[in-house]
Amino acid sequence: MAGNSFGKLFKLTTFGESHGRAIGGIIDGCPAGIELDFEAIQNEMNRRKPGQSKIVTQRKEPDTVEFYSGIFEGKTTGTPIGFLIHNTNQKSKDYSHIKDVYRPSHADYTYDKKYGVRDYRGGGRSSARETASRVVAGAIAKQFLRQTKINAFTSSVGEIFVDKPYQDLDFSKIESNVIRCPDKATAEKMIAKVSEVKKQGDTIGGTITCVIQNVPAGLGEPVFDKLHAELGKAMLSINAVKGFEYGSGFCGAKMKGSEHNDKFNEDGSTQTNLSGGVQGGISNGMDIYFRVAFKPVATTLQKQETINSAGETVEMQGKGRHDPCVVPRAVPIVESMAALVIADYMLLRRQETKDW
Image (tube, rainbow, N blue to C red; front, top):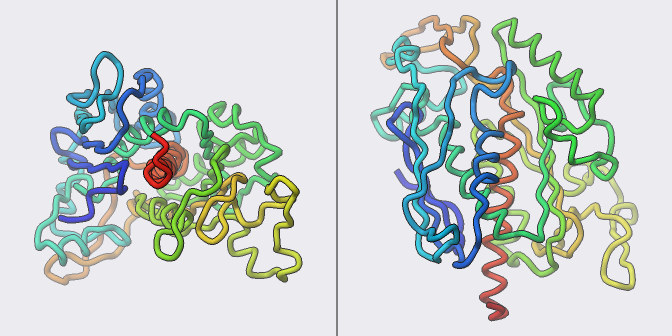
């Protein structure tokens, strides 16, 4: 199976399945001498882990990270960082009823057709459990990017949207509620909606907005390796993501050029930022902001008609523990993938300028 690595200079390779003994990863290319805050790394894991509130899956995993290499006396050594996260609360029997059944809108059918075999226990490699390894790497990338601030938050659930620009939001309030929305009134509506959908045995989608601040101008490559293209790839690689837009996004398609152009100030900054901090695929020093759309979780507790491996029409019903809305737990994943992209381009910039 290819496609298990991400990044060029700051590179992460992940391994493991949802119901295997463990998941983990190897981070290659992390610079030496970074003093790591292990409590901060674990805190990032706690933001993503299951069982943290009543509106997420009740699978109980401590998600404690064990480091095996690349760190000495609390600092990175410049050699590959190997780490492991043990799975402790698998309930594989919850999936025995879908051993030969393809869940609608899941990876069951496509994995079977591509590989001729699939791990049906929790989705195996296609499970969002894999993203825990990304959060470990992202937490380390954040500590490399000490001057850069990366904040993501839930900006919509179903038809409930935060109607304020991110500049008017207090990012310190993101962790003040279980839905991870910094606007209290909107957060309460979102939580109520997710709880309602959960009682119905159904799921619901939403969006996450991410803001990256204090990024220097000059990150990114023209043509195929544009900064926003790599951010898009990073976000679209996350389970359940259906869309990515940065800056003015699709709304920009409704505007005239005279309305959309960001006028310059004398210092090179811009009076507006509809470009989303990226022009010509290269950062311009303004805030980078984008929005990521997540579909409703495919597994529901309602009965659905589907087919089995023999092509027969059958009825199935989801069992076990699943998120009614993936968005709250995806917030740290979005931040982590953003950090990996920026870290990669920062190292590339260092290489280009020989600023080591």
